[in-house]
Image (cartoon, rainbow, N blue to C red; front, side, top):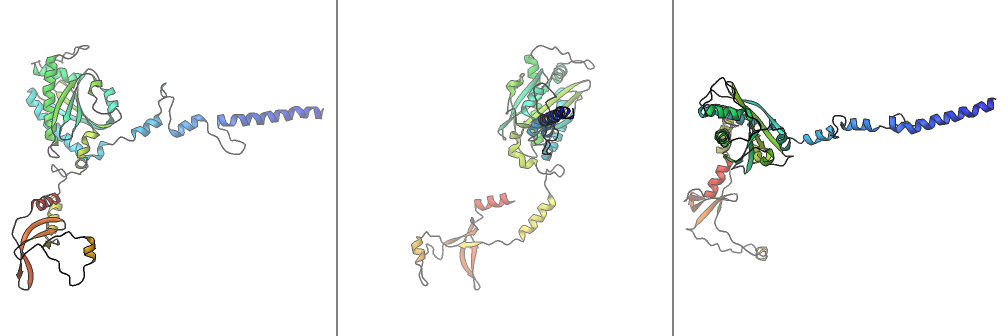
Length: 360
């Protein structure tokens, strides 16, 4: 009986071992070699994938990697100064434009992908595509429905204390578009004045659109700066959103990276004074060139002590004064005491003046 009962026990032990080996890769249990094999859920968690948020299989880990390429506007400290100046200018301009008490405030400045912004625009709205002439690129200005109806109500003599009437489901009329276009031109003129201490740039209105698909000025994956402005006219108002792609700001990127000192945008008078003082005490080597000739290399190699080279210059010829490779002026040779001297006979050359201005 002992021999008969031992056979089933050995079969059960073998079956248990086989079940453990087969189940170890799936449930993460230790393998016979002592190494722990991760299952698919644990791998997804380590990589940052989250397939349980929605049915589309959106991977939050991959999205985090893609969004990490966005550049934060805080790396461009001048932008905040420019847009703060824009708020002050718009407050005055819109008060004159509407003859009403207007308050403009800056909600926030953020970085966003252009495609994500187009998908987030609440419709109906008017999208103004404008061109930055000196920067050779485009920008986008969005006026929401509340501000459109408020501006139309104010400019056409609507009474205070009554909310602007909104009629949904219809396109904007020609009068509404023209009134909003006038307001947009005022805002773009203020934007030009806001950038003026930094650089001269002209913003010209290109077209008005009501469909975001027709207002594409950049690729959907391109990064852009989004500025949200709030306009309050007592009990009425709305929002204006200004979007500038990073490609538009690239020509003035170095200026936007500067730190600022008050309204002088990074100009340091103490450093300028110190630099000017050091320039006056800087020594510079100036060469007087009598003549220049082109000779064959063979002839140069055959020159010996005592050989004579004839110069195309006489005692009355003018010599050229140079600093490095930059021609400065022309002078006449002479002698003072026991030294050979030159006397300047002409003003600084235009090339030397340009180089000096660029150095300053």
